[in-house]
Image 1 (cartoon, rainbow, N blue to C red):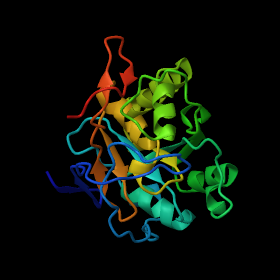
Image 2 (spheres, rainbow, N blue to C red):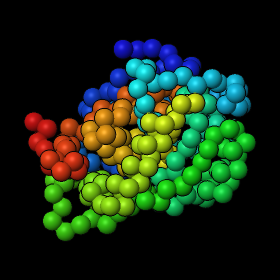
Image 3 (tube, rainbow, N blue to C red):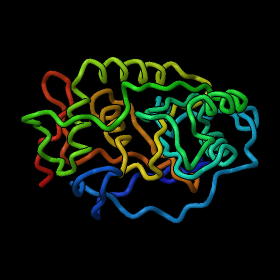
Length: 239
């Protein structure tokens, strides 16, 4: 179903069709995604949360948003977040900063997001760049970075952090909660695995906020499955 919510187009996510590679990875990713759509900058006219009343997810259920800042400056990123009714941002970068984009430094972001009426917190427990464990069962992934992060989803650190994040998503009534990383497109980022966990394990849908303002519904990774113990593993044959 295609519809408009808070000025943001919401539509089902595309099916994986092409090859992709994670930033900083050592090999191609399995289950790659479509090419990104042409992007324009955010919405500089979207100045404050008050200008954009909160709208619930399309089906009325709580939902998690993911976004990558890329090269967006504070005005552009704020406009994008307001357009999607995001009221809380959880930073899932391992190193919360960018030499090329000073507006995304942790301390700086906390200040300007607060002025925009958006709460901000950094959660290093959900950050990427994890060490690949020996005898990893996540054989679906050929990409080392994704495979290592898949293993991280079964650690107490990740499980505790995700429980807190998803509880915030459930309890938030004045808008949406989004996780943020640096990579612009979700299929090249560990945000896709966070979204897999939210949907497959917790039953909470996820949307990816694109730089053209669209909210794309997350398509679960074909090789993912939930074990009997409730943990996520990527060992399924997508066929």
